[in-house]
Image 1 (tube, rainbow, N blue to C red):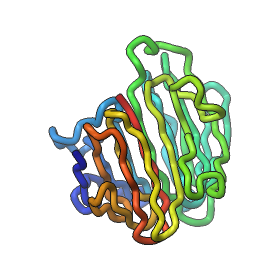
Image 2 (image 1 turned 90 degrees about the vertical axis):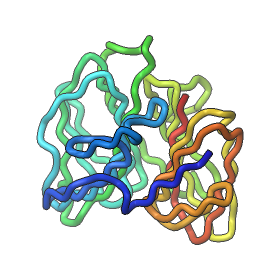
Image 3 (image 1 turned 180 degrees about the vertical axis):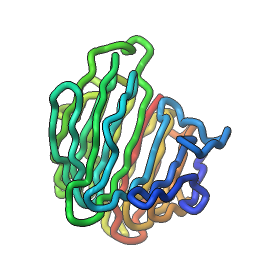
Length: 233
């Protein structure tokens, strides 16, 4: 089953400094049919104006993955962590028992990013909070999946999360295909750029594809594309 959710059908709001679209119910947007997808709870498509951002605010028991598409985001939290994550790179914050953080676009131009929230496993609630970031050059994911964040053993140097889930990314040239073995688990896929077909279903740039009950998906690039996929129970 593949349910394609057109970008124009997403919820969201434009606050001036922040123009955001929500793939799932979030803030003032509520849709009973789009509450979550497995353990995937939030997928926000954010455009953040230059020299603006989110002031300090708290989180608890949530795995928050930020995939920067353009520009950079600067993070600062109550643990004393500070870092600047650039386009093509990823940061992960495990909120655990509680953490307060701020995220600002300190650049002179707009920053765009996906922010993805995944519910932690029940036996991993209430762990100490952590934060980490890692550069993942696009050349490392050219024509193949790069595991960006994962709660699975054996997933190499992916950023760790406290959930039975993976966040993967790939760049696929026009006319090329790439398979991913879901093995019956749920998947949610968004092209950051370009347009693709997933098992023959057309998915345009920034659309979402909710996938279930399939062992393998085949992603075919109709133009040069950059895709992000969350796999979850």
